[in-house]
Length: 114
Image (tube, rainbow, N blue to C red; front, side, top):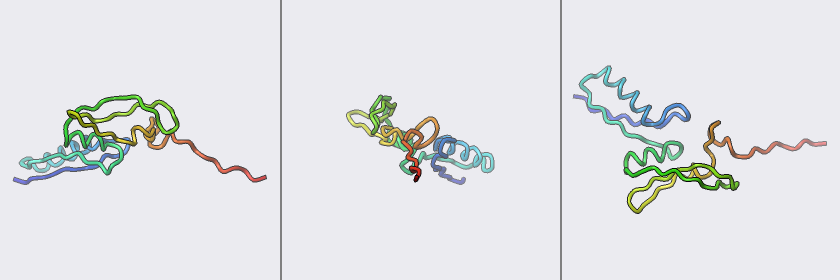
């Protein structure tokens, strides 16, 4: 029997680590029916970090409204387990928006010279 570990980081905006792992594991099982496949959620510290941490550590995701660095209210999450909490800081900094990463950060245009 073959033992396979599938550990794929997310594909930003397309697949979470868990979804990518599931797809790869299904492909492995189609080609190697007797393989034992273990899926491990991973993250490089960006998007998906809190989900990967939750899979390894357990706990509950809690939704909360916070102020971003520009004072705007944004939705964020933290992971709570017993009397401890873990925060994915990028979710509190409004760097993740409906139009992709850094969509809500201000843009600066060069001024025109006379």
